[in-house]
Image (tube, rainbow, N blue to C red; front, side, top):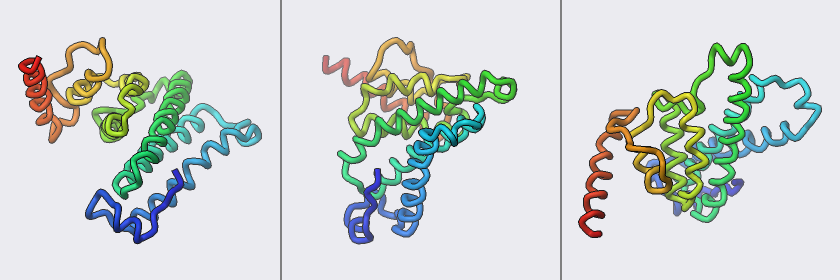
Length: 205
């Protein structure tokens, strides 16, 4: 995703009213440089020759984090939806690759002592998981959310009430969703919305 708005384009199209162009430009230029650099390095056998599991985990994690940030920033900036839609499967693939290398790192002696969730729902990972799920739905990729589930489930001690209710629209077999959110405020307030929707659908049926 290399399309960068001019100031005029940004001013006319941004979806986030308080988003400042100088902040957008700095962020998007930095991320557009960092993300492909990981891929180039990984395609270089000489560069890869001495990289251990920790290094591969760290750099693929950075690319995964950067990719969802770039998608979010470009959505806020007003990049057209087809371009955002095209980028989402790539973002998901980056997270899957990070998950693969994170598991490999967890199998090492060092990783066995320190392993954590790919997306810790009780910590900073909730925000990333929330954006991955919601942007996937918003951009028309709900049928791909089943690929996201194993990434979110990995080493998370609890499931999230809101995210599980969103997953339920696109896949079966997750069981009853919990009645609490891992990020209590403000998300627990959304659970009533899902309940009201279910009741309305039953009445309509």
